[in-house]
Image 1 (cartoon, rainbow, N blue to C red):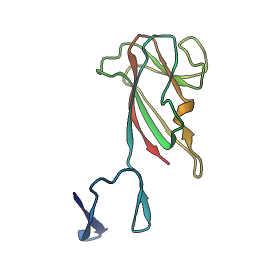
Image 2 (cartoon, one colour):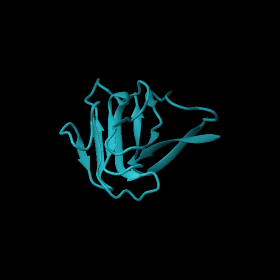
Image 3 (cartoon, rainbow, N blue to C red):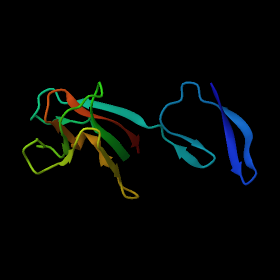
Image 4 (cartoon, rainbow, N blue to C red):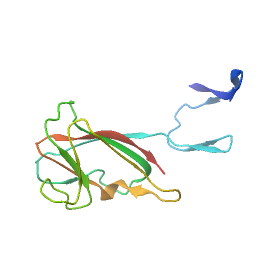
Length: 135
């Protein structure tokens, strides 16, 4: 698969070449810039009141966007996001009503480890969908 390498000018877009991106994933350098492909997340809470880790291994990200939803899109209660120990009855979380979005952008030079974020929900099988930008 080939992608055009374009430059935007005041007059419009100019194609200056192409690149082969067959089998390319993650980061690569193009013209001095790093490219990193966003990765999707879907996490459902099997048992309401029991927080589950967002991602089960160290995962460094500079940006995270999560939407409170059920995987099938019909969340009917709140979803909580926070550190270990998050549960629907503690005050250690951000509470998202159905359809709400939580967004985090790490300061320059920092990252968030998604293995340190947990999700809980008012109802079984509710959770979050979203994506993150890896370091």
